[in-house]
Image 1 (tube, rainbow, N blue to C red):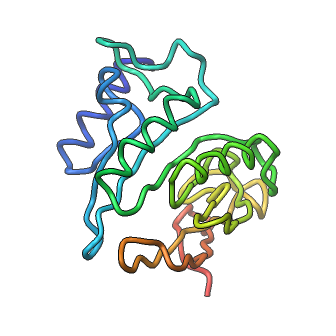
Image 2: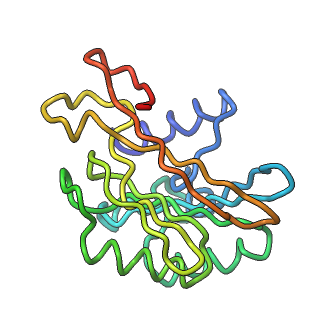
Length: 191
């Protein structure tokens, strides 16, 4: 529904006290990081997608998504590193219904970690993909569906959550928490 729906979504999230990242009413908002405190650590979130046309990138005075150009992403990471202990990059990418990440996802994720991000969280494929430890960072290529009405396959009914353990300003461990959707699309943790 275009910019009107984006504006409504941003406004409704704000009213409910939910921070959004990766889209906004203008370029500054769309590219702004969100900071949160986790114990004694400051965590910064950035979000991007490489699946939308350039026309949906926010302009100086027009709503849209954050700038996915790699130079901009790397600059954003460098900027937030100065203000945060942990940098998390959310990325909407990959091939739908593929349970293994593609080469482009892996190359981009490695470049993001090399630039200083600590955790990359991917989504779009609608199925869970692998979680990788790369150098000092972690990459979840796709968390799959959390709540979604795709009951046509076993893979689309399963997903992942991550539990990241932070000590002294760094992620020391990541645990995969497997989820499943019921026939009425209620999510539950798989023990």
